[in-house]
Image 1 (cartoon, rainbow, N blue to C red):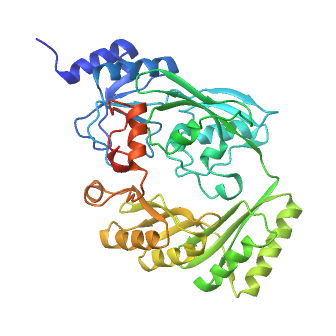
Image 2: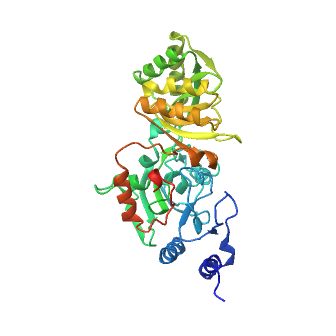
Image 3: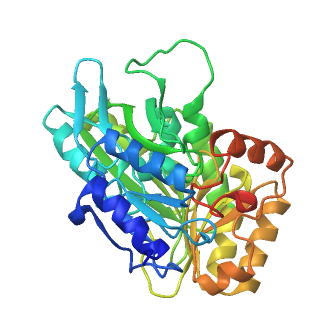
Length: 402
């Protein structure tokens, strides 16, 4: 008797990886119950993708799984490929302030290693204790520190990716300055695993500052907007500038420097706030990533509209952290389409966007997750076809169902 397709997939994978590296993917509510595979080396990962390509198996890449539900609903897949075991530290060039790691390395473990050298990766993503570096890069998941250090792409110096057909490709390098050429790192950052699977990366490091402090001022939307603009025109050099919507509106600034430098900047910020009638409040950032009933969205608006957006989020009973340097950030609201439509209309009305990251499946089935209205969809589809002509990687997860 010929084995069923599912059993045949397991038999082929087990012959390649061993029985302990192949199991049913029973979590996350996938249709069809795909097989979870855990390759331990880059060579085995490439072989898995080559096998998937030959058999037209659809593949969903993941790290620790913390962002597996982000983006569009993934159509039925045969394989979920986890890089959790592909996690060694490959090279730490202390003097060059660079580190090369496998994509399955958790950020928290890397930070702990770098601490002994007085260095760190300037990332503060969602789920910082569990998120892997590959997942952070694939979802472009940076946080408040992007104000000073830049986003995920700015910290990435080089990538190794395994293409949909199992071939290995490299871009960038292990030095801070690279020669000019095609910037595939920009292409793969935020691609949600639709173009290839990131297997390793080289990241730029920074010295750990000797002192740091975060201060939050609270007041009216008008005064906070004035304060935000004043900070941008001042001599202050904060590492983070956040507009907070959580039990009122606040403006939080993080400072990193020498103890004397931090003290001087805190005093200057307090003086600025006092002149605008703002009051100091304890800094407790809103909990965006917890809560049973929630919709978490990524937003981007001009800086001048950030406080107004935070105010609207407060009116709708949500919470938000918006990065004052660029107007990007995250909001959490209840899963009500009317609220989401009101927020998206506001963002688009000021030239911004709202994309849904986490939401119940029923909501994602009825509300456009990405809300993309630009003119680049055709180009994105051609790029997808170039990298993954059989559309096997993360099917349906990206803009336009790519």
